[in-house]
Image (cartoon, rainbow, N blue to C red; front, side, top):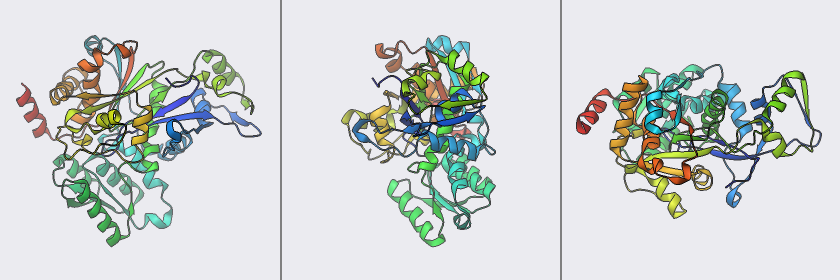
Length: 410
């Protein structure tokens, strides 16, 4: 257990074409002379003053809450604030109350636009002219192409030959230049390096980039504002998300103070425990992962990065690997990795279509699959988690693949 009064934010963790839950251990830091906030919301007040604090093994993480707040301001004019959906039928099946964060309605059809937009709009003017380059199997590729189009800079996108056709078409639709590579890590990286050398473009890595991580992290701020008192968040191991372990015992007092005083002075002696009483305590973070690409689960058990020789899963957005920026977060701060079978992913996707009435790709439906899985349902450790946020992270799917999956299953 982590000590009470610490604020954690979870963002993309395996991170690549879809990310994987990033968690940041933060503490309040008010400086030597205190700080003044005028007409600031309780959550903004709580988060704007927190500073990244190293956790287990003194790990330094690639982003902190301040960089996420900055990203939120930077990308605000371009992204959509996505809605929350709920379903009584799915609540009954899960035995919990589920809140679905619908990044399927984000520009580009996936949450990846947040990180790509932050990275592109962080570039200084002299670098913008050179263009951007990345390697991705889908959602990050399209997101970067769209962000580059908005800012008016070229986008060179290295894509494996096995990438879904709909995601390749998205890249072209947004004006990105497609460069093919083999479906291996080595090919993706080597081709991207060659393109970068030939064009002078700036590399925007699909996950090992603090700007990407900070942009994806903005979804956590939204979710905490939209749904109060969550017990847990479930995200695709390649995804993003939300807040962790903050005291909330005196929320009304702090809200009243914030609402009645135009300016709130934060004294330097105010403890992190006192200040953190503005939010929600003890949120658990669960990462959902397909069995055919379960390197995160294996790595967490082994205590070191395990790289699979190959991955095989319908969840194409979750076929990537752990990076040196993402592994420490999974190792230290993700509460559990829930591994699901292909059948469970397809069934969850079908429920999203039939019950929620929304289009979700396999990688985006894996969070629901995890909540309904026997691994999660039968775990005595998590019986107390009754209010759960589930991220539906993407909606880009080849319909032919979808129908084929349904036919195999049914």
